[in-house]
Length: 373
Image 1 (tube, rainbow, N blue to C red):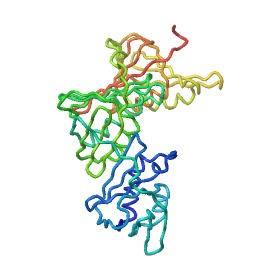
Image 2: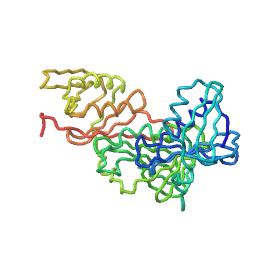
Image 3: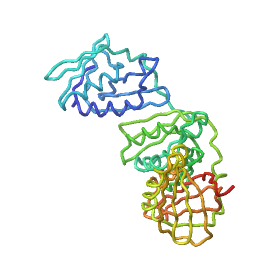
Image 4: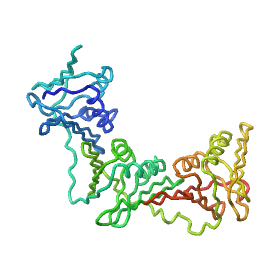
């Protein structure tokens, strides 16, 4: 295999597929990127056996020598990072050796026979969903922060999609926070549900362009095709929790508040909260909410008052300040609506004005305060 390419362009392509290369593996092949000549184009592939990424480059590739070779990813990428942007010649021989040459020098490394590289999954009996990279990125950005990191609850380590001919939903929860994003433009010819690992969705969002995206889903895998880049992932084969059951239906206490004002106040007060619990207290009254925190061990405390629109009975409720910050950070709009029922039931947060063609809802579970039982 022989080709010439810009070192910067090749590096960018390699960094894209490198997202699927494990940092350490008992299989040396998995620490490589597969180079293939593919009908006059260069095809780059990488996999960790759960997630795979394929990238195609429009290059004039000569198939002499090894036309399919696995090249150690770290050494190759580090070499290109250390080079300025110039034309680089890539050449392999029948013994799977790789030579990189420029007008300044030559770099040699040993590769592996590409025939032994793990085969990428092929989807069968699949459902096709046409969407856009822009819509997919938004779904990931607004839900990914709430995905669980607990390996004992594998279903919650992914983003749960429910898609039908009318609309689609992306849901994520870790048991403390829940996000449900309904998207009118995310539709499927038939009703389908699946859970995609958060890592795979983040990689897909990272490589996505704003243009067309073709999603293919079967019983075990999903692929996201952005034209010259494809992300494939194994789905999480677990039942997703009944998230609807934890969403309160009768939250009659409603508070409207400036999102950035509240976010700034919570960020300051949480600095004085317990490092173990990050607990803050919201004392919601007429026209204002008092945000307070205390750390008895460090003899520190803080409180701030933020104007709000509230016309119900006074309410005192506690939250993990870090979780509340993440909810407010990922909410859109100038003002947000908090809906409460009691101090021991979840609070629901929504933008006061929803974006076109979507509906966003976030839920945050309270923490117990000493002021109530």
